[in-house]
Length: 287
Image 1 (cartoon, rainbow, N blue to C red):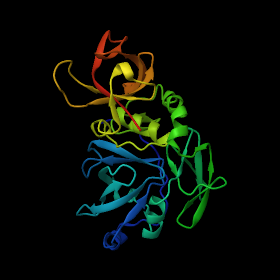
Image 2 (cartoon, helix red, strand yellow):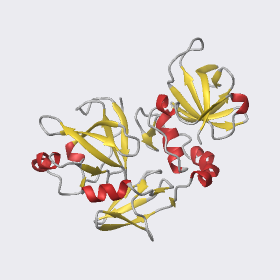
Image 3 (cartoon, rainbow, N blue to C red):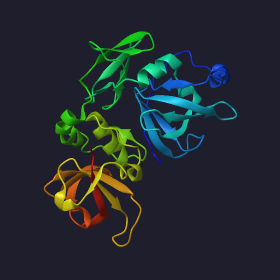
Image 4 (cartoon, one colour):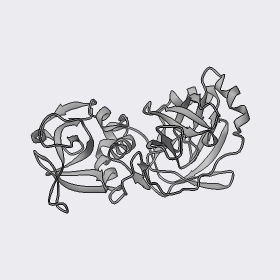
């Protein structure tokens, strides 16, 4: 998989020599204090990126590679697992981890917001959790940091009105397998992050999302419903693609880039290709 290089700001204090001690704790937790961190399928920088941690994600450390250079983690938000470099770890106390996971946090609501940490500017992706946001400041452990940008309190009933508007802000975002930001995003990362900003938690992968909500037909579909697709026109194939129904026979989805295409009973019709690119299985209403 190809990805651009990004410069991450890593807070000091994470050294490999203290990893065995951390691993011995009953519950070792970390916090993503970078813009995003690639999460790999295996313990290698060349391994497939299966997802990303974005700023504000809290994760549990499950174990380490034998040489202690990689950590297997589970994201608290969607329970997704994978490997990140040990040098990217930012450890938090078990008390803060528990406090964080017991509260619903506001999220970043634009693409120009940033955090100032020790005088350093870290760009915050839309949809990132803003821990304990109050009067323009977030709190990580016992330290407060100023957030410059728009935020959104999570309420699905109110957020539903913003869902389609939020989806359109991603138009033109390049496709990136495992991506969850404006720098690059995949189809299920797109739906997950749009719904997160609207106050509704979806699983990470399209086949997992296909098990959430109420199954409906295209005739009964409403704007904001989620459509799922298979590769072949015939037979019962696996769910391999997902998008958000806009109404009036239109769908927004990530395929090459985030784009709007026609949706009919057969599937997604790409005018630029002159054919259907994905074939409709069903739609679901997230309630």
